[in-house]
Image (cartoon, rainbow, N blue to C red; front, top):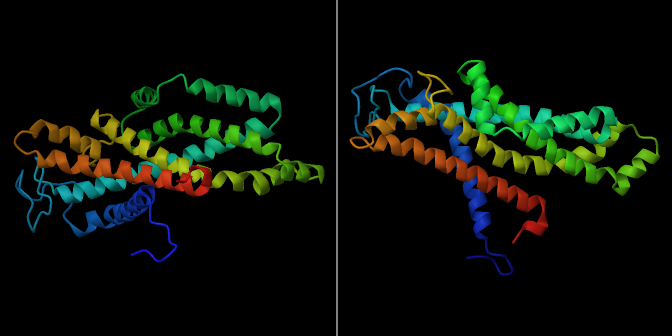
Length: 276
């Protein structure tokens, strides 16, 4: 029971903590899963075995342990997702701040270039980059990072533009503070929370995009497992062995939901006007 005067938890609050808990378990699963079970890259038993004490989620069409492959796929998804977000934040924040605080002859072309990037559909641009370069983990990361930074740059630009004329920023400038000091001391602290919330939602999109590329066969290559490639292969035997399709679909969906719940919860905490 809630104590007197305590507000009952809302659905968004419950969803937020569900997302946090699931993501913690996912990280542990990604780190320890491939270590405590069988080798996820080679056959270890007969194909299409049902879940048992030896193989907790059964085996796939080649006799590889599904639990270990899901864990390894989670590791790849998280590595791709976090790396892409870090790169897109570094580039996007830099370009967005330069668009506001740099001389006009530098900031304007940068922002026009960022705007021009929106003309290309993200997934198609990523496919083009991978097609020109090669298939594999690194090309996927680079391609997704190239498609992700313009949105960050536009967000930072609009937020920094509104913060530039705030009283404390203008006062700091009047006292002789350099542009770098004003950006680091007064602008970036106000952007950190918003960028964290947006990054969680974008992370969900990045993981989904990586799975889509792997599903198409141009992402992470065999024998490394990806949730997308596991779904693509499992659909060929979905009539006789539907469980192979269920496991990667379920964990991918739960991950996307959890990241969106956490991102929405962070937004509500950082902006009280959005809270219920």
